[in-house]
Length: 111
Image (cartoon, rainbow, N blue to C red):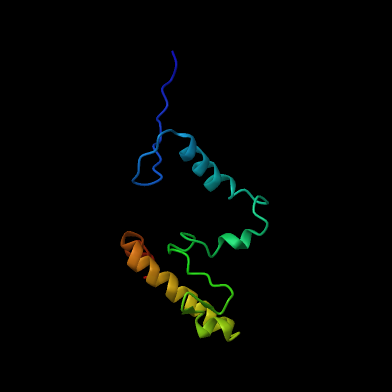
């Protein structure tokens, strides 16, 4: 007699795909990147979305002004402590605005 195993359902989100290929690739990408050495620097995963229960903070690049949006002064100041505070505040703001479900969980774990 063959033993039946439970099947675990995994959701990638609330959308419909034409086939399973894209979902399989997303699942592979999310899994394989956790294997040591796959990403060049393991520390690069520490600040990205969901690592601390928050969405990732916005990233800025050159030029200093892009489509009438300046790079925030704090990012040009060189004070790494203030930059870290700014990034955390931005991640918290984005999470609260865009993913209130994650924000609620984050607030519970902060206590």
